[in-house]
Length: 284
Image (tube, rainbow, N blue to C red; front, side):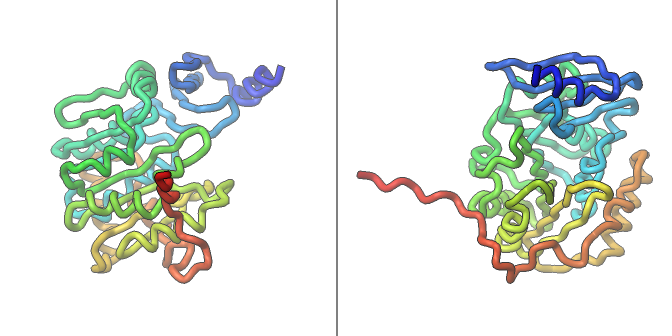
């Protein structure tokens, strides 16, 4: 009865159920509305992880995904991009469309999730967009190429996994940045008791940290840089406008960057503790 009640709430707007994963398969839910938009959720009443509709891949339906890709404007000419967390594949497929000369590595820890992305959301790999079934942290900590942009979007049913929020992980991510590169992440303000500690940890891990809010949501986009040279807002907005116009993007990247905060929430002097890896067990 409880499951049926949750389904009823989730489908308050009529949608067709296309897929419900069961263990040991990925436990994800895929539905489709009358306009042909497809939704990916981890729970019947959980938030949408991906929404793909008409005009895909250039049209990103979720506001937070539009804000995440606006982080491209912090890098002059991204040529190599890493996306940790595939979901329905909306972000990596968008990047493939707007940056046809870039190489994109998309890392997903769940092979079943990749199968769902391919089957229901049109996710397709090629020579320029390659997927990897791997733990995101392990992939980053393994020696490999440097990236101009690293996008962290590895949300699970209970939020960002703890190992992807610590100072040690962020320092490893910083080490995989090419000169002038940026790390972009979506962080939910609420309900998230660790939000301020997460931002404090980002402050401690990078030379500079920028943030912009996603209007009418609880999402905050963090953009971290390893270099101390400040970027002029006008230059970042001009890059966003140029990319929007040149690639025919149906929403304004500049409008997303316009919500740039004067200072990332959670000042460097905050009393919040920095998130650290747990200590290694002591051998007997």
